[in-house]
Image (cartoon, rainbow, N blue to C red; front, side, top):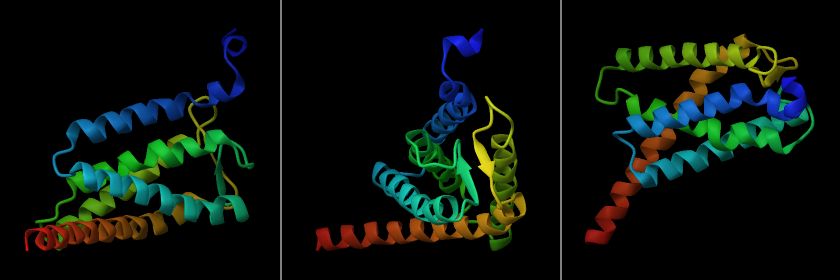
Length: 171
């Protein structure tokens, strides 16, 4: 009966919709560090970086894909409004002033959380919306810390640019 009321694509998106609402709510509700300018930077960086990476892995080599192997509008949703708030949470709670061991532990915990979430997205419909080709969780486990470190370096760079811009305006 449920399938007759809504279409197949909408049924697929239940898991994605729950994740989008949850991640965005938590990211914006708990944000204490990120100013609006930094949020915009992180959001745009995340979209651009993920789109670049996924264009190669997803669309050229079919390593993984969202929903279907083809390019479709639904596949843009995770790129635009799912991953950016996750990166906001990562940066908002990052222990910048702690020792390197604390920072490494934080990244390790995030990688585990991301892998658990990725495993959930691989569940059958309607909760899952992510599919593997030749990609697997081990590749994600190896790559996710690198991607988080790139995000972290980008954020630090944006903070420095902001400080430099303020100094130029004052002088």
